[in-house]
Length: 288
Length: 325
Image (cartoon, rainbow over the protein chains, first blue to last red):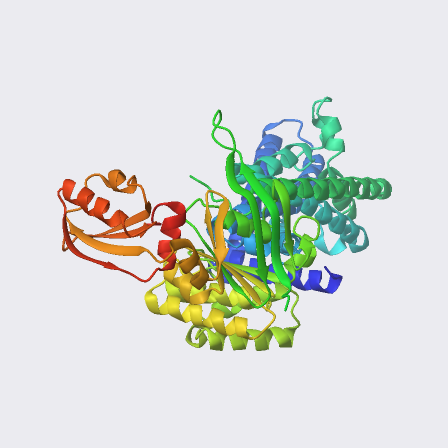
C-alpha cells in the first residue's frame, strides 16, 4: 500500500474512532470523563502522602513537596498508558463483535494496520487531553487551593526535552497496543482484562508513583526494560524534577526499548494475523 | 471464444478442528471451480455446505488447508494484498458499518480505506446513494435504519471501490420481497457495466435461477454439479419432476424415499389447509405406481398431482436427495 493511501486510511480511521469515542455524550461530560480517572487516582495517592507526611514527626516538607511534584507528573503522563492500553485492548473485540466490520476492514488494501494506528491515535489524543487537564487541575488544587508550594511550574517545562521523550514514549505504547490488538484477534476472552492488566503492571513497575529503586531487587530488571520507566524519567527531567544530566541516557534507553517493542509488536501482530487467517477468526463472534 | 477466468479453485480443501475425539470437519473437499468475467455465479447449498468457507478463502480472510485458489490469476495466499484492491464482500444479515455514524460517514470511511481520491470518492458515493435510493437517509445514523436500508448500505459499501469481483454471501437474508428484488436488479445492472464478476451464495433457489448465469450446487464441501440453471434442470432431472398434494402428511417419509427410482423428495406443509405438497424427482415415470401405492399404505389421500417444469429446487433435490428447507 502506498504511503499516501496508508496515511489517508489511518487519518479516516482516526476520524471515525474519534466520533465513536466522543460522540456518546456532550463535549463537557466527555472532557470531565477524560480527566476524572487520572485525577481521582492522583488525588488518592497524593492525599495518602500528605496525610502520611503530616502524621510523621520528622516529616521533611521540602522532600514531600518535591515528591508530590514527582508524583503528579508521573500520574499525569501515565494517562497516555491508560488511554492507549484500554482503548486498543478492546478495539478489535468491539469492531469484530459489535459493529461486525473487522472482516471488511481486513479485506481492504491496508488490512488492519492503518486502522489500528488511526484508532490508536485517538487514544493518544485522549491521553494528551487527560495529561494536560490533570496537570492543570493538580497545580490548581495543590498550589492554588491548598497553598502547598509544590515545585511544579508548567511554564518552565523544557519542551525540547519533553517532546522527543513523549513522541518516543507514545510510539512504544502504540507498539504495545498493537500487541494487545494481536492478542485480541486470536482470543475472544481477554478483551476486558487485557488493558487493565497491562496498564496495572506499568503502574506498579514503571515508576509512576514511586521510584523503581524502592521495588524489590528481583523485580527491578523488569522495570529496566519497560519503555515507560525511561519515558517518565525523561519527562520528569524536562520538568526539572530530576537531574537533567541523565536525560540523554534516559532518552537513548527509551529509543532502544521503543525500537525493540516496535519490532516485537509488529512480529506478534503478524503471527496473530496468520493464526487468525488459519483459524478463520476475523469474523468470529463471542459466544457469551 | 475463450473467456477470462475471474475465480479459479484447484482441488481446494479446508478442514476445521472438530470436537475432540471426532476428527476434523471437512468444510471444503477437493473443490474445483471456474468463474468467468462478466458472470454472476451462484453457489447453492444448505447451511454448513461450505459456501461461506469458500467465500472467506477467496476474500483472503481464511487460508486453505490444501489446494489453490486464484483471483484473476493471483494466488489468494501469496498475493493477498493485490487481490484486496479488486474485490469486496457483502454479507447478508450483518451490520454494514458503525451504528453511531451516518450512512454518508460510513461510506466515506470505507472509500478512504480503499484510498479513493476525495473527489472521485464523493462522486462515487453520490452515485451509489442515488442508485440504492438512500438519499433520504444520507445523514441518518446507521443504527436507525431498517433492515432493508441497512442491507442497501451494505451493498453500497461493497460497491464503493468498484471491485472487479464482488462476493455476495446470502445478500437477501432477512429482506422483504421488494427489497430483495431491488437488490437483485442492482446487481444485474452493475454486472452489465462490464468487466465485473459476482460470486453469490444463497439459500433461495428462485434468486439463483433469476440472477445467475451459472450455478454450482454444493453439499458437504463438494461441488455436486455446475452449469447454467437451464442445462442443470434438463441434465440432472431428466424432466421427470412431479408435484403431488396429499392429506394428511406421510407418517413415514423415509419409506417413500427408499422406493427404487425416487431420486429426491422434498415436502412443504400448509398448516392452515393441512395439505402437504410433495416435490419428487423420479428416474422414470413407471415409479409413480409404486409411489401412489406407498402413499395409500400410509393412509394419505392424493388431492392433486401433475408433472411440473423442473426448477433449480428439483435439481437440488435430485442431487442432494432432500430439499433445503
